[in-house]
Image (cartoon, rainbow, N blue to C red; front, side, top):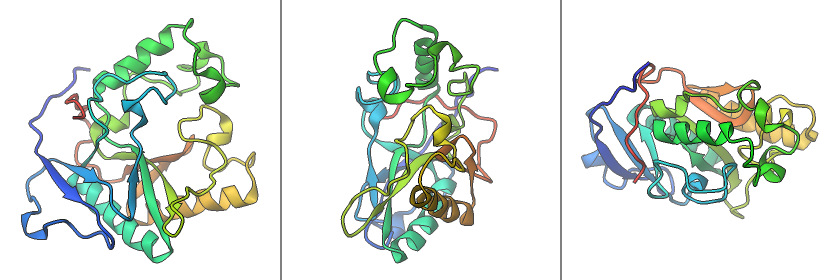
Length: 229
């Protein structure tokens, strides 16, 4: 399947305090993507623009620590933020739109069985040759369609992340959303994130407690490849 390229409108929007746009009068109406700017209820940590990820280097296509989302996913996320803020929480986003070239980088890395520099931190119990078989690495990712997010919750008062039992991008059955390998409190924290996201139109991925995709995503068959910059 060939990668489909489309013109993308990139509009910078700011999430502040109660999730208002920096300038509501300039909110775009055309289809495209928005750039999320961290605010009091949103943190971002773009680890693919660093060596702090399961590959151990900056990932192809990540030229800046920026988060892109489709307008539709952004609108749904705003509703999540309103409810989370009322409960005393914000969201921390690790990744959203992911260019196809980044996915290709993951595939090349997974095929190089000699590179296990990050194994102890990200996949200690999984043999690298099984990453494809077990579904941790694939040649296509829903992230490339622009309406999938990897995220967690943090306490607004302290700025501390909720304890979800495993780190983000930890390749292990304990990362499954309904895993009983984590404590009751950790299960409860995962359930809270799941409830907030599904209530506002996102569906979870069973194998990753942090991964959610907009149910009615606007580009269900399109895998974009413009860089994050």
